[in-house]
Image: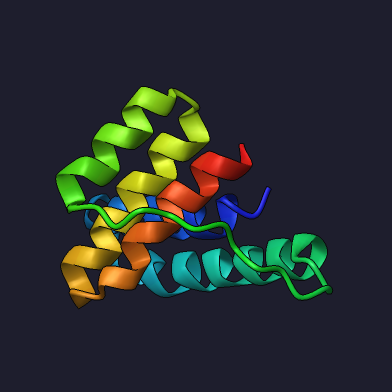
Length: 103
């Protein structure tokens, strides 16, 4: 379920160009609220040590997700690639592999 805390805001961001500019703020506010609710409801309260994920290039991140085949892993990889493109932070690339191990 936590994968939706990432994929839902990404979907909203991608729809903004098709929306009237007056809907941008309420759309982003709704995405933020939904993400907070999902995180609060489903995040572990215990310390969780994520499994080791081999480093990968952006192309390999998506290839791994496609090979995995689960739609949530693929959508998360797509969102992760957007975040990586925007920030250059290599750490975000491992989250798709982590999700692939959990699902």
